[in-house]
Amino acid sequence: MKKSLMGFSASFFLMTAVFTLGFGSSVIAADNDYKIGCVFSVTGNTSWLGEPQKKTVEMIADEINAKGGIKGRKISLFIEDNQGDNTRTVNAVKKLVQKDKVCAIIGPSESGTTMAVIPVIQKMETPVPLLSCAAAEEITKPASERKWIFKMGQNDSDAVRRIYENMNKKGIKKVGILTATNGFGNAGRKKLTEMASEFGLQIVSDETYNPSDTDMTAQLLKIQKAGAEAAVNWSIVPAQSIVPKNMKQLKMSIPLYQSHGFANVKYAEAAGDAAEGLVFPAGRVMAVSTLPDGHPQKAVLNEYKTAYEAKYKDHVSTFGGHAYDGLWLVVKAIEAVGDDPAKIRDYIETAQFTGTGGQFKFSAADHNGLDKNAFEMLTVKNGQFVVLGE
Image 1 (cartoon, rainbow, N blue to C red):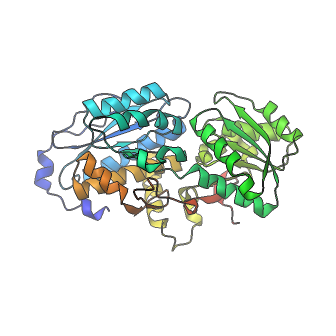
Image 2 (tube, one colour):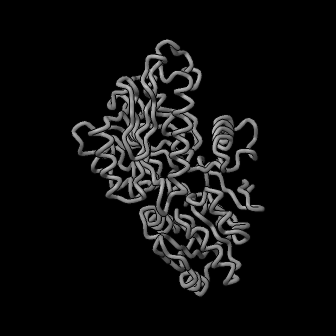
């Protein structure tokens, strides 16, 4: 992918105008720049998702433009911060398409904000492909009704599948679930309850909480009283760090499974000792050093992790990885077909490539292109994420 970006003309590079990255503000872009939109939750309650996504696309843009752009034309990123809000997301997407004239959009960061903007994209007279960084399976299903919508995050149903398979291996039969009352949590709750019987599991307690809640003791007591042999917490908000703390305070000894929303080591750091030993499915970038050398994703995972952590002096995350995959896929499409949105859409629909999220195989029937093998089961050991070693 990168080698094809290096054959540019230095003289042409010097003729382009000054490149400026935007952040919810005006962007100075040359007329012949490739314009790509981004909508991330950079601030707000889910900034641990959007902030690394913004940094990731900026890093890639810097890298590409430093090498002369795509076939001699730079890329300009138009980045909007939706603060995790549906209305802001809709307005941002309208601006990106109708005013900024971008050829594709990376994001939003969350399932709820993505679902809010899907009908807006679908009804546009001249839509552009949207590559969501969220996980809810409904985002791309049915694909026949989501013509312009693609998704870089792994499916929540596959995360449930990996969790329940692990419970089966441990002989667990009774499960208590906690889910946040937002788009990600609601989608996860639906999959957790729908798929339990498929794995011979009984949901003995089904609890929810507001994303802004700061104490889940009441819900955990209900799970404990119901005789649950394991608990699943499904959210993308700081409650992921609060639930294990509450369980430790209550001296609950049953295993805690988190969703793939836990895949930022900052959540484990915030939970402290209470995070030790909890289990969750995640993309492999969180444990790349433990993968065998022959693993097909290892090269791209190492490349992303090394570049990100060197540039920002911070931990890499799977959420930034979704933006990494999305932007590189759009760049690859532009290299092949230019910046016509319809041609980019058609290209993505048949694309196959190895990214941080897995080995993508898109098709007209599958606008995500990943299966359960995109997930690795991880655990927390000494504050770090490591492969569980099932």
